[in-house]
Image (tube, rainbow, N blue to C red; front, side):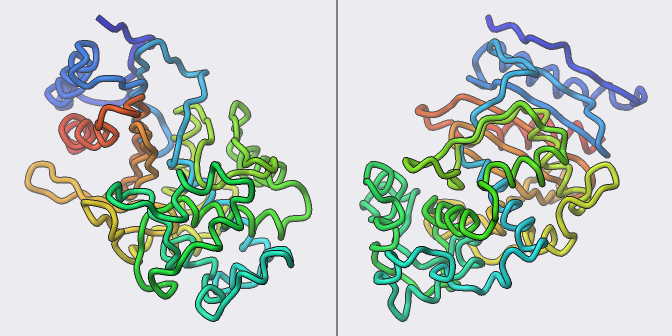
Length: 339
């Protein structure tokens, strides 16, 4: 039987919450019995205060967790900060405005239309499909990562759509965003990120993965503690402010959370913002909208616009249970939050 490593906190609630607390007790039992396997942490906050925090499977508050693709949403924030600071002019600028000369030969009339916004919304039009297993996509993460020049491999991929028309989930899109942002900031991108995002959120215990050339990888794989993941979600709940200080513009947060188009290669056809997922859950006959950072294996930051944030980290990388946090959220956490 798995033991949890931290007793959970409940603060500021009256007796009418006792029945909903049973939801969380039931959830903990199922996690300990492996009925909700490989759940590593569950945290819930409201208005900036954590009122539930529990770790399982040997994890604790100080261990940075592999966020996998949930860190794409952090990549989106870095693009927003660079835009807010006028490091580039417009999200409608072509990706080729940001690339070294050696890649300009790969530009054609269609690829030149790949702009920053199309990359933020997974709508570049490139054959960059990380979801469909039936066919091999030339700019899928599995295909470009083993090559010597990731940028060249991605840009050589065929175009399956015009940019900004159809969304297909693929890490090549944020990867190109990282290359673009690295070209516009004056200091190394990881120092820019540390100064203007992590230091502002008082985040110090983290790991960032790089590509083969030592450049920051915007496609995924950052490691943050669950508490720091929660802070990042709260930054967006607070319209880009942290402790009354502006970190991201309100406009960027609003634009990031818009539902631009559905992801065509994802079974649920989720709506998608600027590297943020859209989903809807049902509790007590009500629809609850959630905007989410998501990563393989079950790494989730749920941002619920009515001032609540939930983080769940997991280790379900190969057992088909990568979306298990959605079940936990809908069945055990939402009924608790609704009471």
